[in-house]
Image (tube, rainbow, N blue to C red; front, side, top):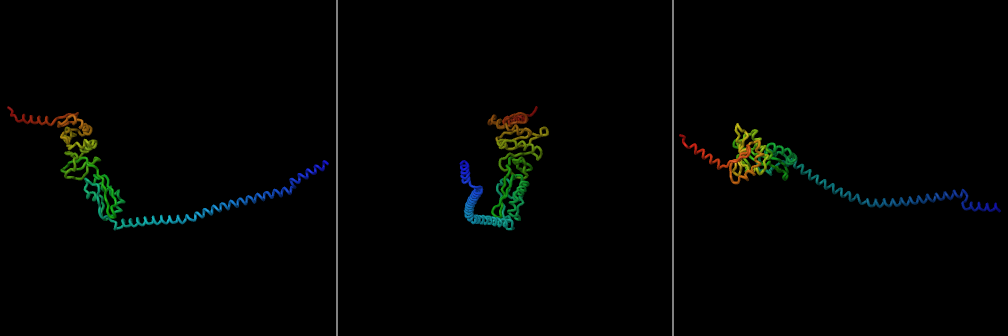
Length: 314
């Protein structure tokens, strides 16, 4: 009986698990099913991807037409601009583009013809060539005419050019040998001869073109605009004993005696000195300290001296 029960148990166990061959067959079938399932999922994925690619390709079919049109339009636009520029450049460079008229703008103290002559511009040059060499024209003009600060050339129409000039400001005039020479705001003296001064700038007289004039201009450049505008004339009155003496004639009627080395420093006090003098006019001596002598007193002393000289001596 015991043997029979054991045999039944083995038989039931063997029937549930199967023989080794059956188990191997079952395992192989599972693997085949898994592989088929995997292949099926890959095929569906490939179908999905190919569908997306097709959709993208459908969309991209319309892009080349729009892009090609835009490119053609841009190409024709740039081609037109280039062609017009090429035609204009060819005309300006050709003999037909030579300069016809020259205009000058901004010149006040310097004659326009002097600027044209100094520029070396003539009708044999092309307008475009002159504009391209603008810096050379500026150098030509400023070297010959110190009064000109800058000169710029621009094209005017097809064959004409304009020279735009900026001048140095004239702050005084030097009188020498019957002519007047501009003293510019950079401290230099222009070599242009004028028969009469222009405006109300101070006149510098009795100076030779030497170191004393250079020293005066160095001092004069240190003055404020208000003090410069209050001066009518600066005269050299130096002697062998005192070669640095100058006499300054003011627009308000006063006279100032000063020494060149200290002129700029002491003349700055002139407005304060005048405010204390009131309406009295006279000579203000700034050479050593500050001394004031009214003109009335000087006149009375001169009259007294003249009367004394008229009395006959016993």
